[in-house]
Image 1 (cartoon, rainbow, N blue to C red):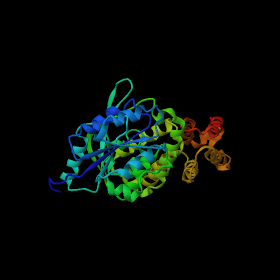
Image 2: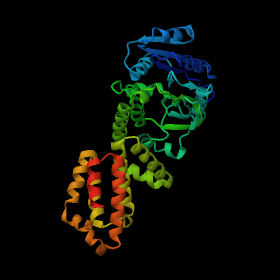
Image 3: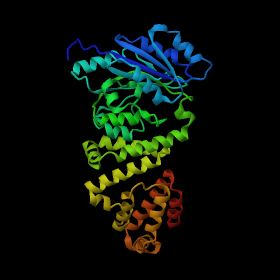
Image 4: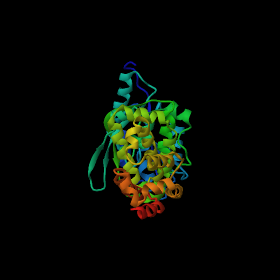
Amino acid sequence: MNSSFNPKVSIIIPVYNGSNFLEEAINSALAQTYKNIEIIVVNDGSNDDGATERIAKSYGSKIKYYSKKNGGVASALNFGISKMSGDYFSWLSHDDRYMKNKISKQIDFLRKRGDSKSIIVSNVVSIHNNGVKKKEKIQKRIIKYFDIFLATSAIKGINGCSLLIPAEALKRSDGFDEKLKFTQDYDLWHRLAKQYNYLLLDDCLVISRRHDQQDSVKMAKVFTLAADNLHYSLLKDISIKSFFNYFSDTEDNISFYLTCYRAFRANGYLETAAEMLKILLKYYHKIDIDKFNKLSNAELVSKCYDIFKSPKDCGERFDASFEKLMNEDKIKDVLSRDKWEKYSPHGNLVMNILVRTRLSIHQDGFRGTVKKVSKLL
């Protein structure tokens, strides 16, 4: 691709009651060193006595301003997309800012690669209420497994404002799903990944603000449930073969996976955490059955593994499965205190397994099973 590659980029800023940060966002868009841009601000039905609208209109012809009935972020983005004339789409949240070279670096990256069809992912700097700034950088080795990264990223995920997306990709995908209030971004990135490559530009090009007025904070419980459902569905859409390739590529991938699993579990993403654990157990069971079996008595491990193979083994369903397992005569025989000596060294291993199981399932929210395991100790 030669130096004449100079596509138009549409920067779309959806905003709802955003008079506190909107000016900074618009200024950062206007300050871009890449000049073939248009800036579209979509007021999603703000009810702040016209404060948001006054700020937007103060820029006159420097931006394109639209106001619509409130419908959520996805609807505001789709509205902006319908009005854009650019070859590429770049999302800017009203409370975030671009580095001045955000667009120019991404276009130059595409130009040097001779690739106009891929989606560019960049890194961000997060800034918190207390002023602390932190670089959030995605590992290059992980981005090549983009579908797995998207599904399992609990630590450093994809910031939508860091992307540069071909306009044709949005048209082919029908844009953001307006039924999704909190997860419209990851849902779209997942659908786009089926047809387009994601390339990592390893620069921090967005300043992402973290504050207590964000929906993910104000409605944390509802957000967590929606995000848990999304990540679980993304995991189920990936073949076990893909996960095996990911795990076998490098031990670092397994370490990152486990870190994300623990983060999901600690933050209440119970379906996601349980599914991630299932997937990793299947991998270990496949690559080294001897090591897997040595963890405890083969009968106990085998039947516990059968539980993990069943679909959506969370909460009450997991409790019921565990109770059925514990009532089987062979398992009772293994777990009988007076017979542990005969199973040495398995007796101590069984005890350790139960202790770890009690801790793990307590953290995962399986309260009924915790009580049953406690009685065995």
